[in-house]
Image (tube, rainbow, N blue to C red; front, side):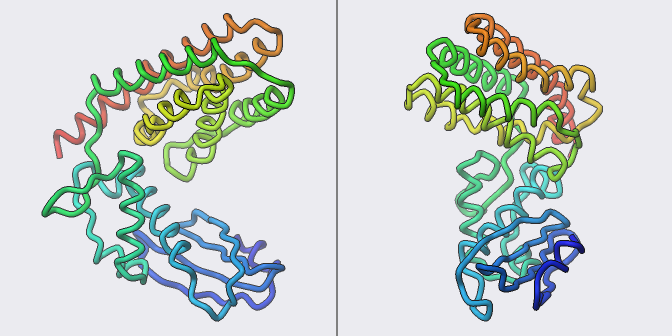
Length: 281
């Protein structure tokens, strides 16, 4: 972060918040105006054309609040079932309640936050083990059916290959900042497989599952992961692409099915830990 700060002229640091949920905003003129937003050490870049003396647009504040709250939920700083205190968040992030409320409304679409009458917003409970099995069942059904019907041109295969290599080489960590980047690439890989079917309704159904939002909280318990199994799971993406390149689509479908079921077996261990912890709280 220090080297990047030195690349820009006239950096104006504005510090706000408290250690638990905090942000540091820097702005400088660099072609456009670049805002480096550091949230608990997690850096996001937002490009904007507003004048540096102008207040950051509400959309940017919503993004700050969204990422901060999302990280707190995934890392269990905001436990399942807890009420989200908008006043406290607004104070800590030095912004009004409006962007906090907008970010929470966005988070309700992911299934990680619920809006309850007379209670405001709460962190969604961890789904039960049975519910996770149902989620994996639907995902497996949609993805394997989509891949059976899919067609791939060379450009799509090249893009899938690049993503598969990125996934396979990723380092693993049990905090939001350590795994979220790779999880987003993984999500993009599987969505591209589904979209290759040409069935927009199927792609919409897959996205409406919010699968990666629901399982993101399962990545925070290292004791539930066998490192060899996890590394094998990451490598499955390369195998799927290789099979598709060789024209062995039926084998790719079977590899995809095994990949999803293997992830289910591995992640359900985390679900048991989290639901047990939630029950003890």
